[in-house]
Image 1 (cartoon, helix red, strand yellow):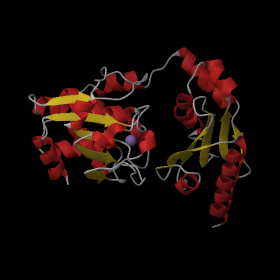
Image 2: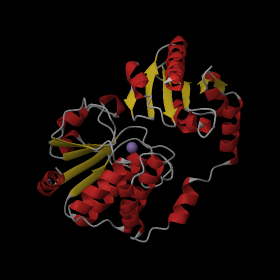
Image 3: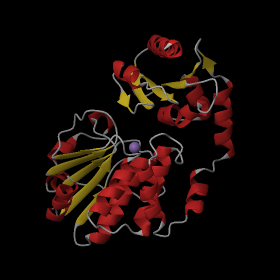
Image 4: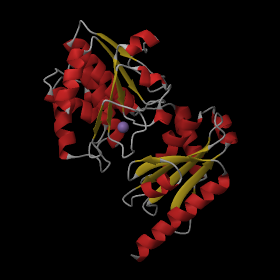
Length: 315
Ligand SMILES: [Mn+2]
């Protein structure tokens, strides 16, 4: 499959690299890692990076592509296979579509090639291996986003998705000369205000009977801290991580745009994805999410998670 992707790249004069909306570091990392590598390897091809941006973007601005360009381009979609995760749905007009992703979900995007590896730590790890296996040089400029993507999705190599292969891949990236200490400093320093938000968040965590930790972030919390829903939902969920008594933690956040409630599930070792799927969501075994319409639904989810812990404790 990697050879087939390479063949598509060789055959395409125009290549567009995309990923899911509201990008995390793995989305950016796989996108820019692939982009900078292909730009260096194929200077005569037209290569574009597209998508929305956010405060995690410390790389560069994005390109605008016309429908004409799209129709003659090979389109990469990275780190998702779900329509609802895309910023727009005109991908079907691309000449060819390649999906590269490490999530569990089944694709609802039509594609020509789908490279899936749920054992990979990150899409950035998959892209690094794809480039290596096709002898496409990974420059220092490309290595930095790829490294950041892997660090982001593995939680600094602490999550269970980190494998021996992850470290081998990272060793190769470090060998390009990237300054990992400077990268870590930039990734993990934050403002005084951001620390204050986390303190406020942590102050009102609740626990179910069997110690599922949760928070319900209503519109007042968002307004008080001038934060958007996904920064609270995904950005703060792991403030509840690492508590000895708490094996599962969930963050519920009202979304102003859709009037739905984002549910972010995290678990130290007990798979919780089935409960996310039951409510129309997906993701990874221990890190997944869904959206529901009422706060009553969040109570049902809490009850289900609590029962899961009850069963686990008794089993
Ligand atoms: Mn990812």
